[in-house]
Image 1 (tube, rainbow, N blue to C red):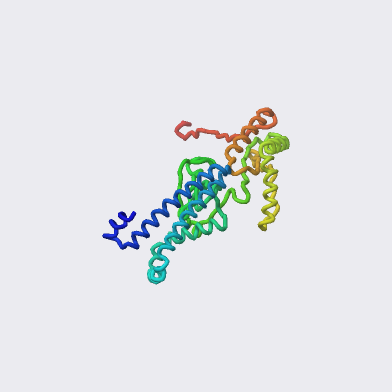
Image 2: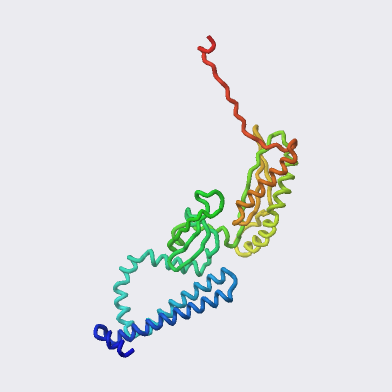
Length: 300
C-alpha cells in the first residue's frame, strides 16, 4: 500500500491519494452490502411490489452512504465549496432546470403516491402500465394506440418525471381499480324488448356481478376519503329506439385489466341467448336498396 501511495504521490498530493483509496474501498464495501441486502430481499420478500420497492430503497441507501463518505472526507473544505456553489447556483439552476424539475417530480411521486409501479395511467396522450420509477424518469409499458382495446402494444416509453407538473395524470388503478364500460346491442323493432332486457340483465349479472359486488366495498372506502356521491355500480340496461331498430346499452363495472376479455364474454353469451330465441329476439341490420334511374334516352 505504501509503495502504491508513493508511486501516485509523484503526480497527486498525498492527502488526495489517501482520499481516493478510502473512496475506492467505500465504493467496494457499499456495493457488496447493497448486493447482499438485495439477495436477502429476493429470498425473504415474496410480494413482487414490496420486493421492488425494497430493492429501490437499498439502491438509494447505497448512494446516501457514498455521499456521506464524500462529505466526511472533504468536511474541512465545505466552507469554500459553499461559496463557489453559491456563485454558480444561478447558472446551474438554469442549465439543469429540467433535471431539477424531474427530481422534484420524483419527490412528489414518492411522498404523494399519486402514481405507483404496477398502476395503469394515462399521462397526457400516453397510456400504459408503470413498470419502473427512478429518480429522474418513469418507464411505461404502453397499451392501445394501434392495438384495439387495453392490451400491450410492446412499446416501452420513458418519461422525465417533470411530467408531474406539466400534463394531466389519469389513474385507472389507484384508489378505485375498476372502470365503467358499455356495449350496444341493436335489435329489430319486432323483437320482444321486455324479454331482451331480462336476458341482457341476466347475462350481465352472470359475467360482471362479482366485479360490481367487489367495487361496492372499494367505492364505500372512497366515499370516506373523497367528496363523491354514492354511484350506481350494479349493471344497468337502457334502451332507445327510432324508425330503424331498438338499441340496448349495457353499462357495467369491470376490472381495468379485464375490459377486452369481459366484453368478449358478454358478446358471446348474448349472441348465444339471442340464437336460442330467434323468433323473439332478432339482431338489426342495415339494409340498402339500389335502384337504377333511367334517363329519357332509355324511354325512347
